[in-house]
Amino acid sequence: MNVLPCNFQTSKLLLELLGSRGKKDTSEKVRKQIYQSLLAKSKNRVLGKQVIKQVTPIFGLSIRIVQKIWHRRKKDLAQGNVVNVACRKRGRVGRKVIPIDFERLCGIPLSRRMTIEDVAKWLRCSKSKVIRYMRKGLIRRHHNKIKSFLTPANKKSRLQWYLDMLDPASTFDDPHFKDLFDHVFIDDKCFFYTKIIQVLLATR
Image (cartoon, rainbow, N blue to C red; front, side, top):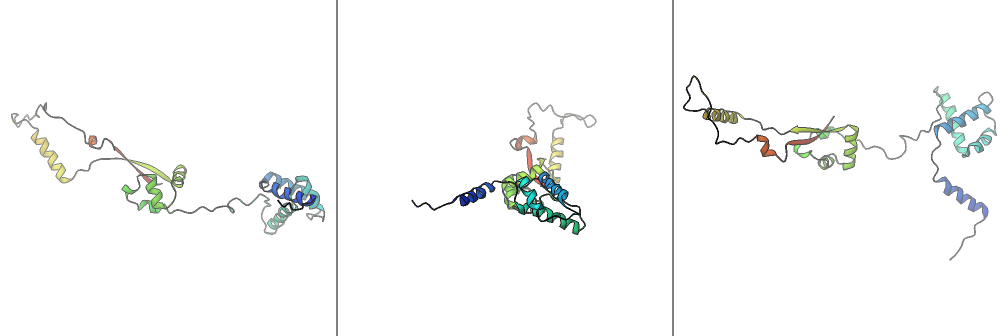
């Protein structure tokens, strides 16, 4: 096994590089403290040559970060804006949000968007993304009770059934229905007992 020679300065540099990987971004509070320290040591809003080197060890940061904070202040003042030294990485780094056209969901047939899997397939995204949109309120569940629609022929047949249930022995002036002791009446929903409510996914 070959061992490469390594002096003290090289090992110290490696430790600094390995330790800096886990560092997080400087908080807004610390950045404001750095800016206030630089502003307090400036003369007529102008920094001396050694001011940044004096302030950097106090906060344990690199000199580059302190320089960026002061340059940010100069840039904001030159543009006539309020000085803002907060970190501007949010929204500019990382994965960007892929936009989804929710109008496409309205064009999907009702029978094809009854489950999350169907909606994810039509929108070309994952099921977890559809669930996140539902939690945000961009997609909602719509419960639709199944009802049978009557056609003109159905209405005529029902009216004829009512007339057939009249007792022939009753008079025209005082009609009454049969006793119907030999009949069993079943609700229409019993035919859809396993599926009374139809769940659909729709946009807000």
